[in-house]
Image (cartoon, rainbow, N blue to C red; front, side):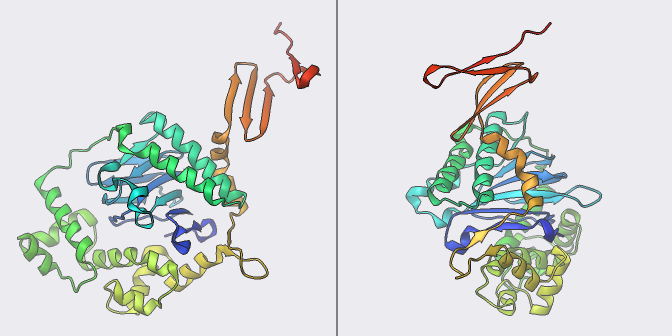
Length: 355
């Protein structure tokens, strides 16, 4: 399910651009995999991140870096179903090989918090704040966003030696499950049956059925339909094909079945989902300049990230001097200081001593 009132999507694929930024309350209850680098930052609530190597409860203002092609799942753990997540995708398929570098071995999935990979966490929060500011001010400056995007890649590349908390999931049962998941991931568009999976993996039919039910919690047919619908999202948002064609191309038997599964997953029919996405594209009177607009509620969730864009020049218990773009911000703790203009543009700040 998702909260459409807080839905926002700056989708680079609309322009053939590698960078996409979204805010939503999705709860992804199926495993997925994409060729892009993903950074998911929790703005509200708690999300469980599950990968083939570890699971972790992400709290507010914590994030996960997901390497290209890593199988993963993110779902909400809140009882009241409240949760908002900011997701950044950098799609290497929209870059030249010379720009993308060694994608296959260049990144590692990792948790970043105040205590885990702290250095990278601080750097990434600052860059996410700079990116949020570009979107808030509606500048969307191409070269500035390119710089931020490449800096994010530099921070997340494997030279940082991310540590990963691992759970003991290396049982034969779990490994067989991952084999089944990977097979579904590669063949979901085909007329796939449980018997075909069992045959290809040399498992019995009953074993394969129990295996998938144990880890997904739902029957195979429903899980397969979830995978197909999830994989169709990008094509749906591009808006080029009819929903009937998208349904058939992702492997669903009909548009009716596709719509029913889509509503079950996201609480909305695909046509309304596409319309909501398109409504995030604002046009001028001549319908030329496309602008992604963040509303006040969305901005409120992002304000804390903008503070990360300030550079601390000096700070002690009484005085804080920070630079934010071309402004110098002076903060006095007790508010009793006096400021005098000196020669050559200098300022003298007098702070009374504590009694």
